[in-house]
Length: 234
Image (cartoon, rainbow, N blue to C red; front, side, top):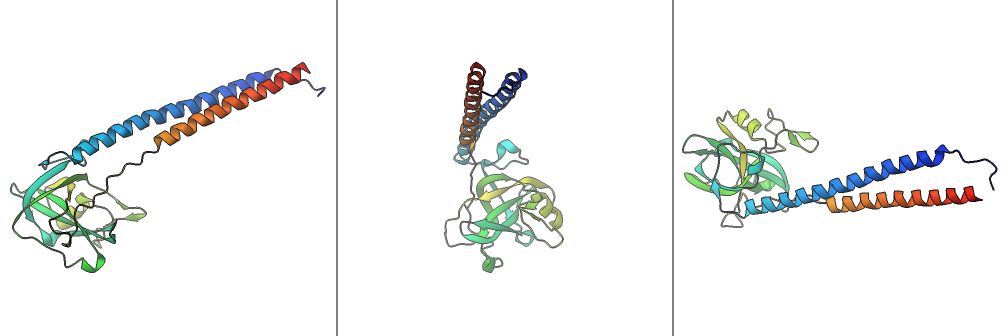
């Protein structure tokens, strides 16, 4: 038996540390469960918007409007279109972001779809009044991952409608764009309907991880205290 007595404060300090750690881990687990409920509700709401009947495109949009199906009528300003770098299921290329002037003079951008690099100048350009249906998407300011938009060089890595409109002197401009749905011909360019709606949802796994760690802390504390009590009895 170790002749050196164990300090009286040892169990108290260990208990306090274990309690703080246990409570913290449990709180993280509960928070992830709450986030799981929020994410599932968000996914359900967005899914309802995507499959709802299209509504008229609004003058302005907010977060609650994203992914709503909308429709707009107007004339494409093809000479003001912007090519935005894209990575899609069809490979790398460009989104064709074209302003649509509506009958009331208001302008909104339409992401008409994807074109590969070799076709960036030879895609279809419908003339006259057109009707566009698609998903409302909020503007994407700044640029892409590790790459900033370069308005001076007309080089775009995100669909920043305000910045693109400013370089083309288009006003007034809506604060969103429409991701156009697929056209009647699958071979026509640009290729619409490539919107990917995906929300990462790992909250359940995270919650289980935090709860397991909390259980491990409780188990380790129990073993240490049991051994400490055994040592004192000896």
